[in-house]
Length: 535
Figure 1 (cartoon, rainbow, N blue to C red):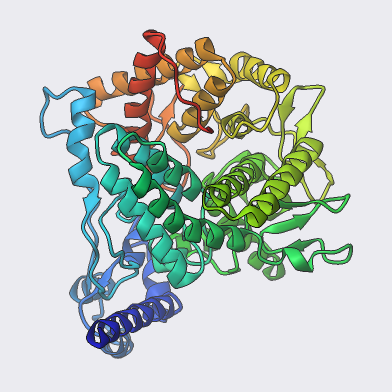
Figure 2: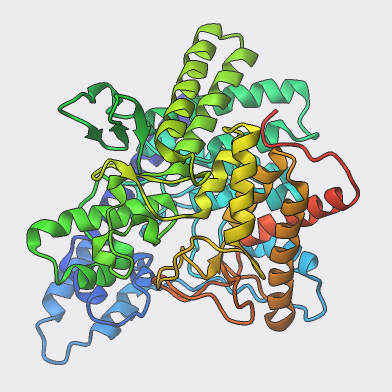
């Protein structure tokens, strides 16, 4: 027993050292010189590079060699680092069906438990699925949508494995990070751990004894995650209305926002961030970087939801926005915690979280619902009024069953009238150069919308959305033999554009939602009862 404990302690110390060395690397002259040199079109490549030698040798040799006249930076990088390769995900077989192709992809996207190496990766104890392309690590909210397909493929064990990884990561670094890279440790992503645990608990493969044991294990992770999002809530008052991810609303209620503890440029996008901030006065750059990072925590990086001026990224103000989707997911987390406490016989905690969920629901409707337009909007903290940006994030109240039937019907009408296009659902009603705007459509938002509509007996519209999305995915697959990270749903013959990188092939959450939609489509067409998201 003592040997095992000692081995675990040594491993934890090794991982901690690796994390610190990686963070120091991002502050080094070497890192800044390479990222600003233009050697790599994608800054993430060098941020993910593996050092071949010790950091001490690497820094020492760089300092000595770079002053020589014949020094070539590109040659130094190749000599001292192993550069990561993108995950190639086009079909090996021209004859495979779309579903068959996705099934083949799972093994390509699967990674085994990690070793502790000399790069930015935060090693995970259990196998996991990555999105694909340039995304060679696990991503938090992606994993829920990927899990939808894994469950359809009979890979429940992999969903459990990823849940275990997230709970372990949270224990190690204090949150479930954006992804398992050192440069992601200052932020999380939309809280979906409760949604992942519900997939397991609602599965027919989980018997009662397993359900109770798993629920107890999951409860620990959910409590920790809730604590992360609510840090600083006890300190809020009339003089201190914002702290980390919590915001005191005008009448004293507490809701949440996206945030990041760092005010530095992102290492994985260093050149891009420095360039974007170059025209800002020095005193404004820190908050610009924080707002960029907070938008990454939202998963919507980037969107006019966060911009004060549609065409100007430097007007980003993510931390001044109370988002509808985040607060709905936290309402669901509070509701799930309440239900788990009942199941585990903890009545006091059940009542506590039931009350918190009701308080949040009331505040969401009070501040984020527009009764005239019949739709939800984000709330601008600075202006103390609702944002004017209409987005598909407002389908999430349906997804978590927060609204009544009348409100749901009005939301469904607006989705059909304004967001439904030939290829599926557009992300916002704003066309911009940002990827989380029109004309792009994303698998996660389609899932939220479809399941939300089904929660309120809006099956005909839900089926229409499913059919249009699947047609978009299938048409692209027929032509290009790949699935994409996002799609142009207005002009489905064109590739989706926008963002800081080229549209990626793969792709984890598209695979997952597509398989889940095929199953839902079959159930709806056969007139079967579709299980709602909440019991």
